[in-house]
Amino acid sequence: MNTFFLVVVAAITYILLWFVINLLAYFVSIVLKTKKIFEALESLVYIVYYIFSFLFGIALLLFGISLLLGGHFLWLIIYFFVGIGIIGFLFNLLQMPFIFLTAYFSNKIQEKDFEENITTAEVIGEKGKVIKKIESDTIISVRLAKYFLLLYLINFASVFLRPEYHAGWRWGDYILWPFLWLVSESLVIGILYVIYHRIRHGLFFPEDRRCFFIQVWKMCFIILLFFSMIAIIITKNIKNDTESENLAANADSNQQVAREIKEKDEAIQKLEEKANAYSEMIELHIEKAETLKKQIDLINQELSRGDLSKQDRASLLKQKESILAETRSQEAKYQELLERIEEQKQYLLKDISTQNQSLDLENINRYGGEIMQIGGVGSRLTQKTAYLLTEQGYLSPAEDWVFSSFNTPADIMDVDCREGYKISSCKLDDKKQKLDDTFGCRIMVKDEINNRVNIECIKK
Image 1 (spheres, rainbow, N blue to C red):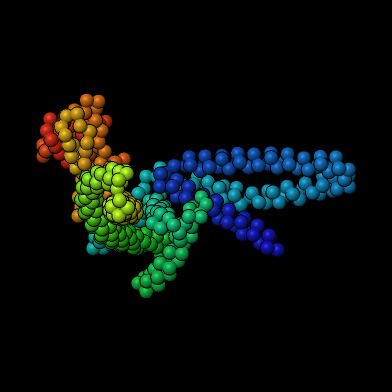
Image 2 (cartoon, helix red, strand yellow; image 1 turned 30 degrees about the vertical axis):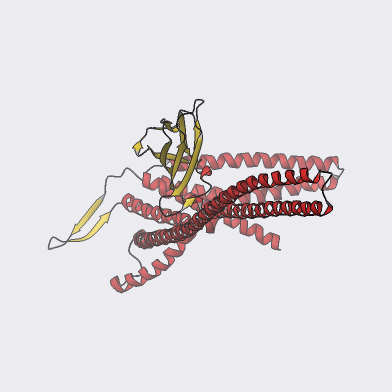
C-alpha cells in the first residue's frame, strides 16, 4: 500500500512539474510573441515518446522470449493475448498527461494572433472623458504573461538568498517550488483583492478574468520585491555587523597575543643577556681554575718529594682537595644556571610559536618588516623583525614573515614577503627602492656597518 501511494505521489509530482514547464514556455512564448517554442517542445515530446515506446517494445519482446525459453507456454499465451494489451494500456496511460499538457498549450498558443493591428481603443463619454479602455487580446495576454514571469522569477531568485536551506534540492525542486509559492501568494492576495473589488465595484471579479490575475500578480510582485529588498538589506547589514564584530574580536585577540609575544621576546632577550653575563663569569671562572690548576701542580710537585713529612703531606692533600672541591662546585653552579636559562628560553620560544599559531592569519591583510644587514659587502649576517601595521604587535619568528637572500659576492640582497603576500613598499635607509615581481626588492649592499631595509607586505 505504501509503495502504491509513493508511486502515485511521484507520478502526480512529475505531472505537476511538466505542467509548470509547459506553463512557463507558454508565457515566454506570449511575451516573445512566437510560436516556435512550442513547436520545438512538441517535437521533443513526440521524439521522447517514440524512443520510450521503442525501448518498451523491446522489453516486452525480451520478456516474452524469456517465458518461451523457460517453458512457461501457458503464461506465454496469456501474456501475448492479454498481458501485452494491459501493459501497453498502462504505459500509454502514464504518458498521456505529459503529451496532453504539451498539446493543450500548443493549441492555445496556435490560437493567438500576434500580428493583430488593434492595440488600444478608448470609449469617450459626453463630456469628453475616457470612461473605458478597450485593449486587444494580445496586449492583455502579454501583460498577464509578464507579471506571471516576473513573480515566478522573484520567487526563484529568493531561493538563493538562503541556499543553505535548499542544499538537498534536486533540479525539479528549483522549478516546482517557486510555482507553488506563487500559487500560495496569489491565493492570499487574490482573496483580499476579491473583497476589495466587491466593495468598490459591486462585483467579485472584473469582466475579463485575466485582468484579475494581472492585478493580483502585479501586487504580489510589488509586495514580494519590497520585502525581498528589505530582507537583502537586513541580511547584508547583519552580515557586515557580524564580520565587523569578528574582525574587532580577531583584532583584539591578535593584539593581545602580539603583546604577549612582545613581552616574551623581551623576556628572552633578558635571558640571553643573563646567559651572556653567566658565560663571562664562567670564562673568569675558567681563568681562575687555570690558576688553581697551577697551584695543584705545585702541590703535586711538593707531594712528590721524598723528604716530606707526614704532617706536611696531609696538609698539602687537604689543600689540594679543597681547591678541587671549589673548582667542581663553581663549575656545577654555573652549568646549572646555564641549563636553567636555556630551559626557560626554550619554553618561551615554544609558547611564542603556539601563540603565533593562534593568531588569525587570515585577517592579517598587511604587515611590516625590517632587515638589518650587518657588516657591509661580503657579510650575510642579518637581524629580522616583523610587526603588524594595523595594531601594535610583533610577528614571531620574524624569519617566517620576512625572507632575505644574497648573491655569491654578497653585495646584492633580495628581500621578500612570505607566501600569499607581496611587497607594496621597500626602503633602504628611508630611500624608496624599485620592486620586482621575481626578486621582490633587490638591494645593492652598501659598504657600511649596517644596511637597514624596511618593507611593507599586503595580501595578494
